[in-house]
Length: 285
Image 1 (tube, rainbow, N blue to C red):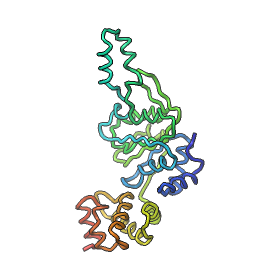
Image 2: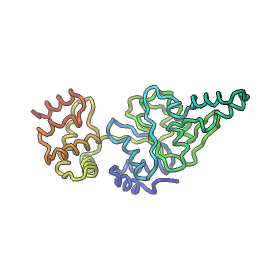
Image 3: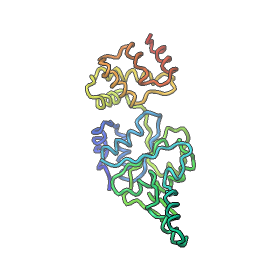
Image 4: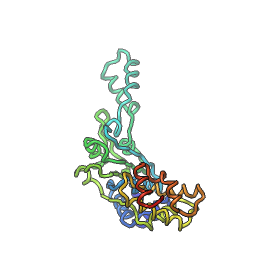
């Protein structure tokens, strides 16, 4: 059972929740849904990779389940683990019962702690599974993902194989900090995102910040573009563009002059060296 009928419906549905996709994004999301394939989205931080998964969930009413990847992530945090404390209490309560009987009693669903991957597989309602910043996890974690993304199933030795009754819509994101394995990539459709053109980012601001004037929105995205063109440690994200627009509204400003930029740089640049570079190279005084 699919979530979308056409790329045009994807574009309309995502726009309805404030995410304005280009044709490539809308088409790739539609194909991932229609083909039942995971969608791998790569690109620099802040271009809207995670937001796209959230928007798909919001637009379809699906439950969003997120696995945040990090160095040291293991099977117990990604798939499942057993509630050992509860099992121990049950063993103690069993007294002199035979171990075989106790073993069968404690390795049941009652003692299973499901983590994001297993939770997404077991859900029968529409689900978006977001595997965020996949490239930050250790290479071994990709092996955990292969069974899930190939057959949408999880094998638990004590319980057997659990197969999805309804496949989740899977989004993997990567900042390309390291190269993901070819085996993982083969299982996915691929989408590369960059920062949107100025006109689309302006439209995003107008959509997400009620009450802002078009002229101010254009000033903001033009200045953001200039900041991204500098050699900064962390370029402003689309979310920070939106935050900046809300900041200026909160201050009652209707124009973005040099003083306003200088006073509010902390909203969009989070390193002092970046702020100093911006002040110097944009002649903010």
